[in-house]
Structure formats: structure tokens, C-alpha cells
Length: 403
Image (cartoon, rainbow, N blue to C red):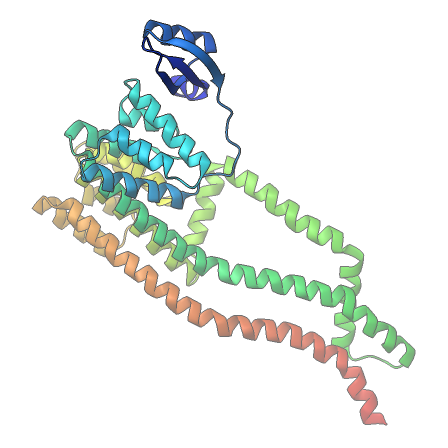
């Protein structure tokens, strides 16, 4: 609750003059402008003006922009640039005003004595528990530059993996959606025109033609209910999915069992899980604490539930590999690598190699699926639209044969 209250405190821009008459400007987070003025007077400054900063409504912050921000901070801190100066440089150089405002808020919190990890925790919308835990571990161990670098690598690899999965899953969805719209236009606009022509013939129509005409009549009469039902049903299902953990678990479990695509999703989830745990463990986060964030980072309810069980068993002293094996969700290779890593004291390295392997597997699967889906989709679309065209021309062929 305290974090939410602090994050909602407004920011005031102030201008003041020191004892020598030199103008100074800055920003301060405070409850009211009177608090800002009192604070400045205590510092020996004569207040000229205090103005509440307007909240930016210019767009949102994309995950790719946060990845670039982390990489910039890692580079600057590793190069020896002081932390506050690094925030100032990166914030001023940001092309997104909202991101620049976010960076400036974090810089101001650090400037007033807040720890780095706590300053980031005030913005959970953009920085999750994993990100903040890693920063805290880096602060505590005095290896902030190393942790920022690992965070940047982790985000870059996660971003690349998500892009590959989205491209593989979105392609058939978009094509089929376009096909549905084209099919609806044909049934609603084109087929009725043919129907009027066929009515004037006064002859019996072939069964395929009658079937297509019946479909057309149904679409013409109920198009609003069909489209409304699809959109409304999708919206209601999405809201129910968001609110129900059991529905999320069932949906994610079904997703993993899909033919072809299920294997792709499974390998991507395993890659994210192993990459996350490797990054956190390498940064010095204790294994039990690291497991708190790993499940959520996997993005799959089945693995989230399994990770909770693994964490409870590891907390009681059971080896990680044994706990992972008992969960029945990990492939044999990952189990073997985790077991070897525990015995050799190189768990982070072994998990990182497992993540590399499965990321390459996902990459190869995406390339193969893209090449395979194109001819399959062409055949499906060609069959659907071609079938309608043939059905509508059958009566004309029949008449031609009679003549």
C-alpha cells in the first residue's frame, strides 16, 4: 500500500534563486506546493514559482523501449558514469516523453535517498518483481554493472523469443481472419446476385449450389448476430480467462497439447524458465527467492503452478533437479543439466546452456512452420473459395450442356 501511495504523489517543477541571485530550477515530489516551498526555503533558496507537473498522456512505453533503456544503463554504469548522471543522460535522450518522465521519476527518488531497487518497485507496471529483485541483488553485492548487463541480455533474448512465437502464431490467425471476412463478403454480396439469375432460369439447381445459397441466406439474415457473437464471445471469454486461475490453467494446459504449435509453445516456455532462473541465480539471488519470480516469467499457468511446488520442496532442502523431476513438466535434458549443474556447482551455466538450446529449437521450428503453413493455408483458402465458385457456376455449365 505504501508503494502505491508514494507512486501517486504529484511532482512539482520549481524555480528559485540562491543568496547570490543565481537562478536554480528542479523538480520535487511532494503532497502540495506549500511543502515544496518550505523545503526550498530550508535550503536557503528564495522561491520564484512552483508549478505542478502535468501527467504525460503521450503514448505508452513498449517493452522494447525498456529493453533499450536497460542496455543503455548497463553500458553507462559499466563505463564508470555515476548512476544519477546516467539516468539524466538516458532520460534526456529518450524519444518517448513518457519513458523520459518515468526515468526522471526514478532519478528523483534515488536523489532523495531511496535505494535503486525501491525506486524501481514504485513502477510495477513497467518493472516486475524479477527485474527489481535482480537490481536489489546487484546493489547488495556491489555488482550493479554486472547485474544490469545480465538484465539487458535477458530482456533482449526474451524479446527475441517472444517475437518469434508471435510471428509463428499470428500468421495463420491473421490469414484465417482475412479469409473469413472475404468468405462473408462473397456470401453476403456475391452469391445473392447469382441467386437472382438462377431464379429466372426456373430449373432445378445442383445440391452444392443449393447448399451455398442456403449459407448465403443465413449470413444475409444473421450477419449481425454472427459478428456480434464472435466479438462479444471473445471479449467475455477473455475477461473470464483473466479472472479465473482455473480457466487459465486449463487453457494453458490445452495450449501445450496442441499438435505442432503446442510443442513450439512448450519449448519457448522451457527456454524462458531456464533463462530466467539462470540469470537470477548468476546474479546472486538465493534459489528459493529466485523461484518466486521464475514461474511468472514463464508466462504459462502450468509452469507457474509447478514452480510453486518446486519452490516449496527446495525450501525444505530437496535438490532442485529432484523437485523439477517430481513436477512432471520439464524435458529430460533440462533435468539432466540441472542435476549436473547442482553437483558441479555451475547451475547457472547449465541452465543457460539449456536455454540456448531450446531458443535455437524454437528458432528452427518457427522457420519450419512458416515454410510449411504457407502451402497448407493456400490449399485451405483455395478449397473454400474455389468450392463456392464451382458451386455457383455448376448451373451455368448445366445449361451450357443442354444448349
